[in-house]
Length: 114
Length: 120
Image 1: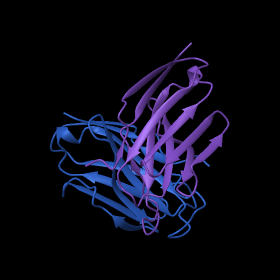
Image 2: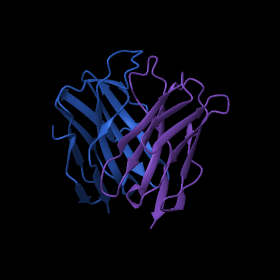
Image 3: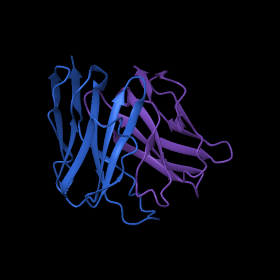
Image 4: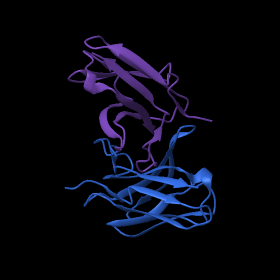
């Protein structure tokens, strides 16, 4: 059973508009959440993270929102740019005792059209 | 730093052959992870090491898979014998984990470019 779920395999957005990528999790022990971006033929690269003690973290055009009661997080990209076209992975960890391993969702492919 | 280095980038082999994938983590990182990416299952954690010691290998599919980390700068993932269903992209990643309750963002894994394995 998947502990981290990204239910939308793909998303298409016009350049300049907002992209919203969603992620749900089932394990209430998760206390740290991350988003990774992956271009073809490359490894995933870290984008932004949020601790469970926060409900929002912002870094430039990227904002991650966390709703612990709903076990849901989202990544907002504003404004979207063609270079943002990539696969986005949501990841989570229960760091207490986990020593750092991450559980990933299956990813959402974002296409930003000029 | 050159980042996490994986080799080979591409491997095509026949069923039954032994496959060895190699990884050099970032110098100074104390944790190393092997992930496998497939269309069906996404990114799955196979095994991870902390200070060269295997911590969790529950993701290793079966006994055909084995991983070693003989020192802090090198790890291998071996598949013997290989099967067509092992075809996937295998990623190695490393990170610096400072402690059990580290809150400094040590879960930020740095991934290699991956090894694409095709078993015919």
